[in-house]
Length: 252
Ligand SMILES: NC(=O)C1=CN([C@@H]2O[C@H](COP(=O)(O)OP(=O)(O)OC[C@H]3O[C@@H](n4cnc5c(N)ncnc54)[C@H](O)[C@@H]3O)[C@@H](O)[C@H]2O)C=CC1
Ligand SMILES: O=C(O)C1=N[C@H](C(=O)O)C[C@H](O)C1
Image 1 (cartoon, rainbow, N blue to C red):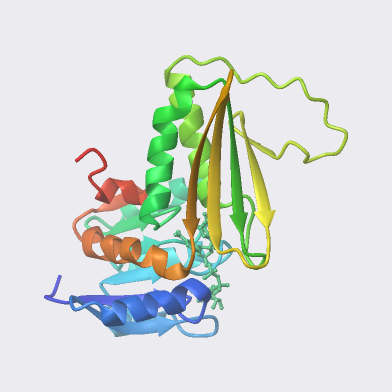
Image 2 (tube, rainbow, N blue to C red):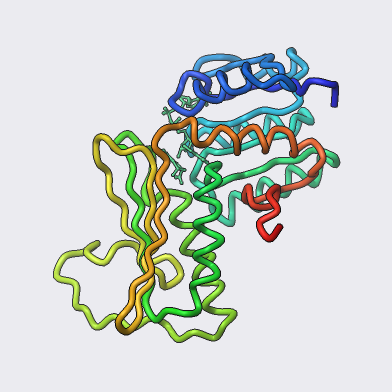
């Protein structure tokens, strides 16, 4: 890499993309060399000799953008949601053909959100019941949030490792959806409300006690330290990195 990192933002006119443009422009060790959105040519990235592309677009768009980046040896820092095992497998396949190129897929760039997932994993085996509630602005592209799905998966894996029994739930649901979505046995509920940005509660319960882990992103500036960390680190992390925690020393 050169002394300043040459960065492009894809989805540059969106809520997150416009914030990322400002953050990159303000970072002394980065240079914004391309800012593209719907209707712009992706070729602008290679023409501008982009080293790292930040994708903050839409689940329908992200795979095409990443295929272009990886095939052109451009590292990716991805906040866009919509990740499935199948998509991750496809991305790994592209990366195998591009040795030295790295992509970070971060379900959440918020440091507090990453810590929420970490703490939730630690708590998971100590409580009989657990539910995840995510709360977002009503313009959000998808539900449940990528963060909530990841949180529930990590909790389920931790409980599985500890040999926990499935959580009891004797409820009969009169209306479909009343108990939320089932992510590997963990109920996940999505609230969409004007005035909200991005919030999540993980509720653990057992006889006589409740533990609630709550994180609030009050504005999109909250995600930018994580975006910049990803840009700084991805050039020395070839292959697929899933989760910003891989670039943080959580036990330090
Ligand atoms: N990982 C994280 O920490 C965060 C992730 N997100 C995710 O980032 C994504 C974007 O969120 P917002 O900024 O709120 O959405 P938004 O709708 O405000 O912005 C998306 C932008 O991408 C553009 N776009 C769509 N398709 C494109 C394409 N093919 N090429 C170039 N640009 C394209 C749109 O025109 C729009 O300007 C969502 O998937 C959201 O869930 C949002 C906040 C934090
Ligand atoms: O669309 C959003 O706003 C957010 N999307 C991400 C997600 O789905 O987890 C991250 C954060 O929750 C904000």
